[in-house]
Length: 96
Length: 145
Image (cartoon, rainbow over all chains, first blue to last red; front, top):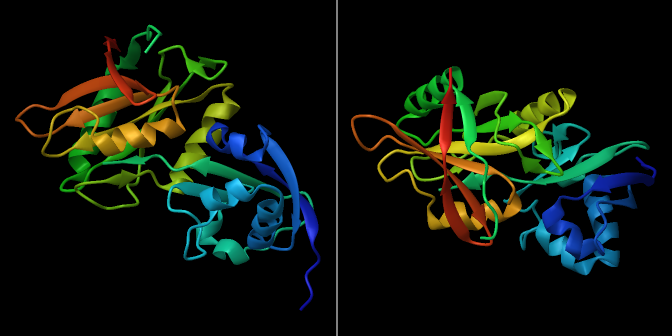
C-alpha cells in the first residue's frame, strides 16, 4: 500500500535544539515517524544520534509522541503520520 | 551555581500524596511529577499538583516516569497556564540525595526541582534540590497548611 509522504511539525526540547541549528520546531517529510526522522537526519546528522540508537530503535532516554500519544505504544518508528500531525520529542524523566 | 532558588512550597496534601506513593511503590522506587507556575521556564516554587506516576522501570534501583503519565500531567498543567516544575522519586535503601544517575539525567530539565524521598529509616525523609550543570544544591521545602 502506498502511503503519501506529508510534511509534519517536529517539536524539539531545549536539550536537542543545538543539534538543529537552535530551532524549537522543524518541519520534515515522511509517511511514518521513522521516515520523518530519516528526513531530519539528512539535514541534522547530530540530531539523529539523539533520537535513534545503534540498533535502530527509539533512544531509551527520549519519548516520542505523535500528537499526545507515545509512539512506543503505537507502531514505534513505523507509526504513520498524516498531514497536520505534530511529533513532539521530550526527554524521559529518569534516574536511579 | 549562580542563582538562589526560591523554596519549594508543598501543601500537606502534596506531602502526604508523595510519601504515600513512595511507600505504595515498595519494593520498587516510586516517582511522580510536580506542576505549578513558572515564568520563562523558571518555577516560582509553588506547587499546584503532585501527581503520582508509574515507574516504567519497575525497579528498586532506577525509575523512568511513564511517558503517558508525563504527557497527561504536562497537558493538565498547560491547561491551567502552568508547567511542570519538578519531579520526585524514592530511594528505598539510600539517602535522600541525588545519585550520580539522577545528576546526569537532570540535564534534560535544568530548571526543575528534584525531590528525593528516602525510605531507608523508620520515618520518611523528603528533601528537595536544584541540579544544574552537574552541581547539586539543596533548597528549602515549605509545607503550607
